[in-house]
Image 1 (cartoon, rainbow, N blue to C red):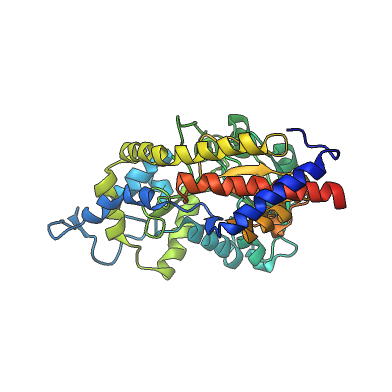
Image 2 (cartoon, rainbow, N blue to C red):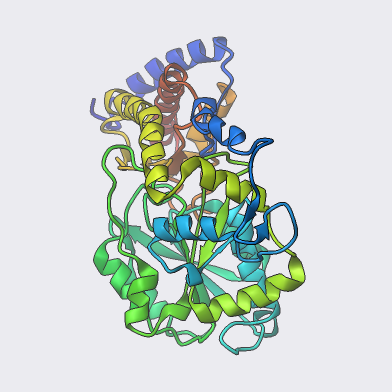
Amino acid sequence: MEYTRENAPEILSEAKQQYEKYLSMRLNLNMSRGKPAPDQLSLSSGLLDAINGKTIFNVNGNDYRNYGILDGIPEAKEMFASLCGVRTSQICVMGNSSLNIMYDMVQRGMQFGYSGEKPMNAQKNLKWLCPSPGYDRHFSVTELFGFELICVPMTENGPDMDVVEEYVKDETVKGIWCVPKYSNPQGYVYSDETVERFARLQPAAKDFRIYWDNAYGVHFLDEDVPLLNLLNEAEKYGNEDLVFMFGSTSKISFAGSGVAYICCSEKNMAQLTRLLSFQTIGHDKINQYAHVLYYKNADGIREHMKKMADILRPKFLKVFEVLEKEGKGLMKWTVPKGGYFISCDLPCGTAKRTVELARQAGVIFTGAGATYPYKKDPNDSNVRIAPSYPPVNELGVAMSVFCCCAKIAWAEKELFC
C-alpha cells in the first residue's frame, strides 16, 4: 500500500472502522516490558529441586548456609567467568539484579570516586552519554543522580564512535551506557571495530567508566552472534579500569530470583569488594549454588538457551509477519537475531498518538519516547515492541491493533496538522 496525502482519507476511514471493532473486543494485552512468559520460567523449574534435604553445603571448607564469601561462591564465579570470557579474579557474583549492581556502581562513584579522583558528587556539571534509542532504566539511573544526559546516535554497529570519541574529550563526561549484544531496543550487536574503539578510548576524565550491560549475552533466537570481549581488548591498551561489565540470569532462570554479576579489572574489584564489606556479609550463596547444581557450567547455560530460543522465536516471527502484512510502507523495524525487543520507527510525529490509541483499545506498549533520555524522542517516532510475554495468538491481535493505530495517527497528521 502507498501512503500518500491523496489516499490518506481512504486509509483513515478504513482504519477507523477497524479500530471500532478492536474497541468492541475489550482487549487487555500488555507488551510494555521484556517480561519472560510463564513457559520460559518453567524451563528452570528444576532449579527449585537442585537444593533438597540431602544437599551437602560444606564445599572446600565453606558452609554455604552461613555468612561469608563476599564475591560469590567459587563454583558460581567459575561458571559465570567462563560464560563471560574473563578470569575469576575479575568477577563478583552477587544478588538477583544487575540493575541493582549498576545503580550501586554509579552511587559508589558519586560517594567515593573512582581512579583516585574526587567523588563525583563533589564535582560539577557532570554528563553521561546515552546511546539512543536505548534502555529507559539506564537513563533513569543517571538522571536521578543529576547527570546531564547526552544522546549519542545508534547505528547497526553500535553507538556512533566519532560522536563518543569527541564527547569524551570533555572531563565532565563520566560514563556511557551500553547494551552491546542484541541491544535494547534494536537488537544490534556491536561490531568488532566498535568494541576496539571502546577498548582504545582515551577519555579526559580519569573516572570515566563504560557501563557494558551484556544483559542478552546468550539470548540468541537462531544462531548466536559473537561479540568481542571488551574487558580483554581493553587490557591490551592498559584501559581495563575503564570497563564495568554486567550480566545476570534474570532472563535465563527466574526474573525475580536469578543471579547477577559484575566483571571488571582487579584494581576496580579491590575497591568494589572493600566497599561491599561495609554493605553486606555476603549474598545469597544457596541461590548461587542452586544455579551451579542445575546448569552445571557455561555450556549447560547455552544449551538451556536453545530451549528458550524455541519459545521466543515464534513470537518474534509473528510480530514480523504482521508488520510485513499490515505495516509495510508506513513504518520500519529492526530484525534482531536475539534479545527481547524490536525497535519500530513510525512516521515522524506519530508515535505518541499511536501508543495512546492502542492503550485506549486495550493494548499497552512501552511509552513513546521511553527509549530516549528524559523520555523525549526528538522525532516522536520510536516505539519499542516487546514480544516475549503474550501468547502467539494474542501477539498477532496486539500487532494488528498497533498497525491500525499507526495508520490512524499518520492519516490524522497528514490531513489535519
